[in-house]
Length: 538
Image (cartoon, one colour):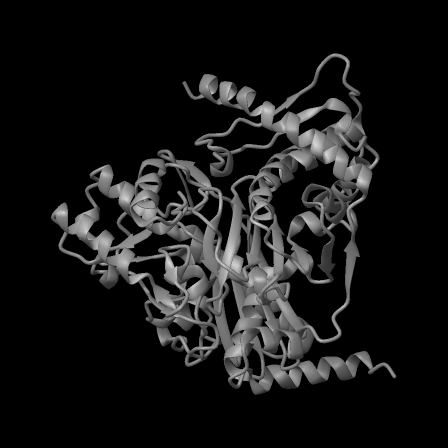
């Protein structure tokens, strides 16, 4: 028997008033989103703020003003929804956590002053440092990782390096400002510096190697002293301070003292939101960038520069294929089609544009009729590019029509991921399931079908697919209070996803074969992409 809608509202109102809720806020590449969930882990309210990175002085960045203005606007919209829906002000929550896009570089001096503009995951300016550290450690250090940014700054002899007192990620910075605690969840920390998953903290031998490098150049700080402390999921990471409460809610309505869980990276929240923290599970997060996270049964046989070794929020080893470029080029084409429609007098909503374009792409030939696209807005480390130049190519005899054109761009978005994932399949990595989440899967069927063709594996999607990250962060906040010693994988299986419904799309043989033909042409055309980059960035 269905419960009366007003009774549901009253029940959620009682949870809000009693503080039996959990709040998760995630800083994504294009959106900051807050999700408030109840004791039963159901959504109560949400708020969001749209933002965009900027290329300034050769670095992709967001300003501190943008960070705090965006957080304030996002939270204010959440609080306004609580007030309008339930008739009460949001004065407290039961637990709270912050997540953000992983990696990047935020160095601070002893006074808490940011010494260099925030350098995001999108930057591919640390090739020399990443290569040298990978060789020294015998462990793949990607260009995005905080330690690669730090070492590149050392190699560049940047003036701020001697003054570093604290180095953290975006999530770690926000948590620090809100709570005063210099800590980081182990998943996010694994994107700063290699983790020893047997002890649950930074790899000590590699830490010593780096400290020797720094000492040989005369730096007074030690890396072990400037990195945030590492915490696994479920641990306490402090409380919301008086100053932090005012930063989050300048109206003064929100009270201090809220328990905070370890801040995490978006990869970790994606794993939580898709129930992919157990061995032989994996997920694909597909938005502005794309990454696949596969929880391993065993370590890989050797170091691969295309594969990042990170961890789940509990500290289990994960193979990560991360690609800088995914939907940005498609977003630009959708915007262009919207402008064309307006020129003909049609005002089409953005969701309708995306659904129409995505669905039309499925009508294209399985191999895109010989059309070719490249979606590199920025550099792409999986294929060795430090800069990008989006482009579309066709031979005169190719089947040039709109469905093939659109399918080529969806295939191009998945191409670099496919190249990286083939390495894991070559290592005989086994998967029981792959769960998709992110904007690519918002239009029903299309993203799943294309990704299934690319990976030649079934792709599952749950109802929360397009809102996974902030909800996953809220789940981690709830786990800190409700876990009671359970392993995170068991908590998710027993209390979060028991009875969860999801759709599964298996790869179609003709589309898998078509994507295989496309990817071979794509790899051959990387030489054309390189020539374009060399020309435009000369």
